[in-house]
Image (cartoon, rainbow, N blue to C red):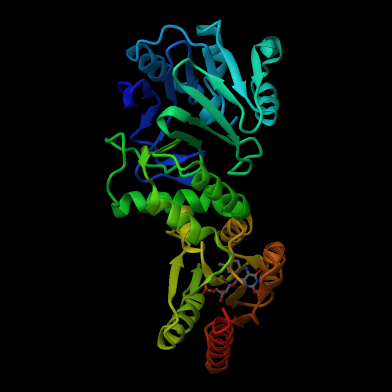
Length: 394
Ligand SMILES: Cc1cc2nc3c(=O)[nH]c(=O)nc-3n(C[C@H](O)[C@H](O)[C@H](O)COP(=O)(O)O)c2cc1C
């Protein structure tokens, strides 16, 4: 990939992974991704904004050479995670005069993770709203913690109104174009997957950093993954909506079944909710990737886990889903467990306990032996009644 000019003397020099299908071994990336890095060439000094994964060295160094960058004054680290900082040790060797510019928290993480004690004197620690002159371009730094690590920060090229936002407003999306001009559904699906997996647990920080971006009012947002954005109003609006604490009148039913009993229960419950006009989506956990499930739970008011009992507890796929729900901390107000067992079970308690840190109300479970009978169907109707009643108060 050649270095690509964003505005005069600011280049994208990162790497694109067209074939990547899972990021961090946790996030499915059906459209690939990119690890973005940027080169800012001032009249006196040059700064690299972030690096890339350690294994991307060949492509990365090639890009810097194509940008004709044979020396560097600064390597700015906006975030210590290895997809941004993995090449820092190598670049410190390649550019022996370069200083590392970062905040105190990020410095601590970089030093600890890359064992950089020997080069500590090459670090320059900057604080919130401090600036660094590159000659005719000025970098201004903004601490933006918890989107999504404690160290995250933004950097602005003041004269060009370009804001580097690290993972904030990023998307795992390998784009042939430098800028994202369209609202293609594929791209927006990527935006949503990324928000769900990375930003959702930190909604309060997301709201704070949205306000910061609005205050800075950049003309161009250059994030760490996916395309560069001009006036990202659409994505900002989506973030505002997703990061609010108000859930929507919708229900997510995530289920697994071995012999079909739990599936029949799901069918009854979902049909009942549909009859009542409550938006509901069901997901078979056997074939639902974590990005789809994560996106689905962003704003649902109720999440139902449906599982048979396996060895006295929930099916492992339901445990996995519950773990994901707990970790992503969605804004759901109500949780439910339904399912089927044979002779003895602790599945409901197990899931209720797993999900208790969310602080949501756990609705009366419907957990039955074998196939659903009339009594089970009546209990599922009652569950739909309580969902309808509670959703009226949203
Ligand atoms: C591997 C396996 C382990 C099971 N372990 C239990 C168990 O510990 N306790 C129990 O009550 N039922 C157990 N069952 C029975 C199922 O929970 C029961 O058949 C249930 O009705 C299946 O629901 P489904 O039709 O939705 O798959 C087990 C079934 C299988 C296949």
